[in-house]
Image (cartoon, rainbow, N blue to C red; front, side, top):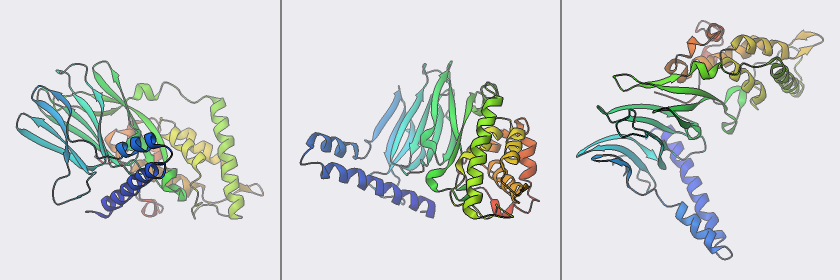
Length: 332
């Protein structure tokens, strides 16, 4: 088992034990709540969670040679006697979307949730007709995926996560929910950024001024805490400056990297009228995280308006590149 997998399993086990202790603690005075809690903590039942004729999606025990936890679950597609494993090491397997017609493609969307606090898991889009095709995304914050129908197809809000930036804790990840549609093809289809939905609500001047005020306050508080007189960044803040990073990421990932860069410049703290150094390094570090996130390539985010500003700041030739390798989560 990899170190990351072991960390996730230990974290999940801790949360399971916590859920199980609460009902027993309350057992004497609140027996009905206690029994409900015990039932909730039981392993997910094995067997079909979706079926159409001889086709089914089934929850399985974890395969041998890996995790032996009683709560560990896998998921597979069963077609007659043929079983195709999709993934394993989950606390739960849940259908998030099911096609209105058995003949539709894709057939359903499934989340395999590993149960940790970071929401690590696998998102599967399963197509059963005319042939089996699987598309998968893996990473943290997958428990926040939302799926709805657009005609016969699924549409998604996928989390673009920025983890541990500028000293942020694990619970302080920055998440931008991207509108994503399903693009059908003879090969089974794939995820595609919904550029139309992304451009529906450009930021107003009033919204930008509000973001600027919030960023300016946060960055000035950081400078004050650091007693910075010449350089603010690096080193990292230790708190993640979440207001600033969220505002910049929201803009950059909606085709407004030009506005993001301008807001950062206007909000960056000054000392005696002179900007503290580090603004360029901060922007480059953030752009490096964004441009090296797996969804950047998977969803062709380099086609966003002003994406060249992000790519220029994240250029591998930049002296900040090696020190700011992306730590974000979703993988193909």
